[in-house]
Length: 143
Image 1 (cartoon, rainbow, N blue to C red):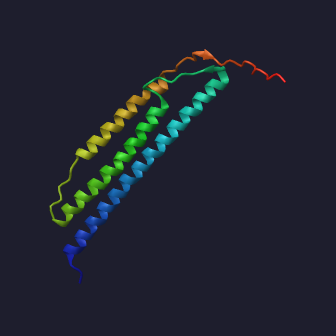
Image 2 (cartoon, rainbow, N blue to C red):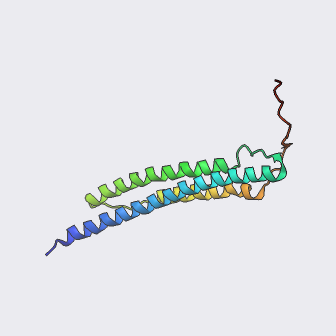
Image 3 (cartoon, rainbow, N blue to C red):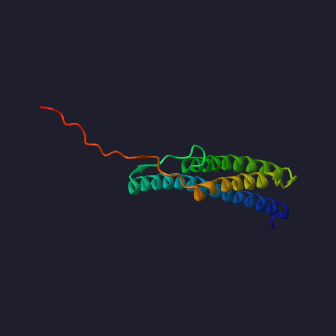
């Protein structure tokens, strides 16, 4: 018959791995959203330039590229925190001294809520084009 203590520890380790993989999926989603937002912002800028024939300038802080880059950085940080958390829980399981820590949950939730709040100006504020695109003919070379 199998040792019940060993089976219990095995279940705890497998649950720790599933939690780690869930954090990895979350980080991959954040990185993917960051890439998509940055590229979508570039697309919208080019579309507005093409339709209005005027150059559209980005806000220095609240723009799609900054939001996308921030999401990518947060996704990378989530991977680092997930690895750290996995190793801490692994050691605690091995020492039979597991203590849940909600600090990571509160930290990541706060960061993502802040990013969500900072993205609101991207939706609500539309910048007006500043200067027309000049379609001047190119000088021809003399032969």
